[in-house]
Length: 394
Image (cartoon, rainbow, N blue to C red; front, side, top):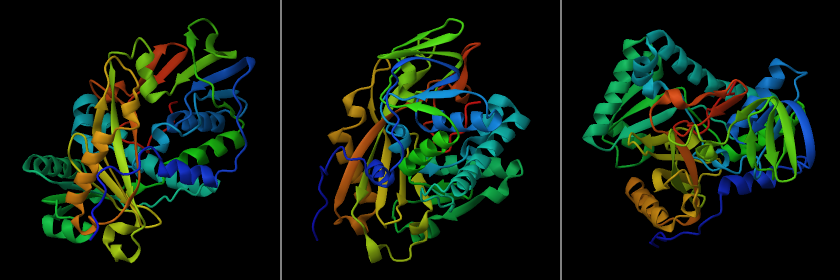
């Protein structure tokens, strides 16, 4: 048996490599000159693109301009674990914060958003490996067992028992082939996706809807005048409304600086495993992770690789985005060792890719996900716990 390399190749993002190879879409050149628009969206990840698409659906005559500092989907939206999941694992917090009716409504809406991804991508012809098989959360410690049991009890107490199934350790190990599980909870409304394929597909859908997109166009300044002015390196956008969908870069906005912090997650990808996976229950899209605060997460890709990652990488001070958010050899080595523990049967397989990405996390609670900074400026911050199932910020 050959041993897995402790330091696999760093920096190559498999999801983005695959997505860009498949994407022959139109170019979206940087903004040059001055533009007037009804709505300016800053950020070309999931939140910005979904918002643009939804605005055009609701008001087809609305002019919507989206700017992106790099390329659409090149940030967290194209680098995450490909988990589209609801908020039912946080239902108790939602009810505590918003009350019973609104807490349940938020959880139900988040579940519907996962289904909406499947419906929308099918109708738009977006091939993003969407597989609605649910998510299996396993406990690897006594504390995690208690947390999982609480999630199941809360869902059942509030009429959502159809969404959760308790799994004992023997069944969890049979499903996943992993020895780490003490017990588990199957939440049935989750789905696996190839995240970068989804992001690039949303870009194409936004363009078809009439959204004007300028990539390679970072916002340099936000002037809170009437209309609002968004300054870039080669032009200015005047807009009646501005949506800031900038994830980690939200920490540069003065009102948000003390509400979020930036932490990285790191991922690795195995070589194709082919028949070695056998007919394991989780090999066709069932998501697999644990109940830690900074979770481990995994899925089997369409070409039968294991994509495995962990939150809790480099944390930066003062809202700064640092190189270790995207390339962090020491954390990658830890993720490799964790992979060995989770899947000892595959300790000899090669690792072809390793990458990371920063994400913004709200310091207080879910109420900081979105809000208005001014009557004409809206912000969205922490979607970190739900890497893919982010909806339109309308």
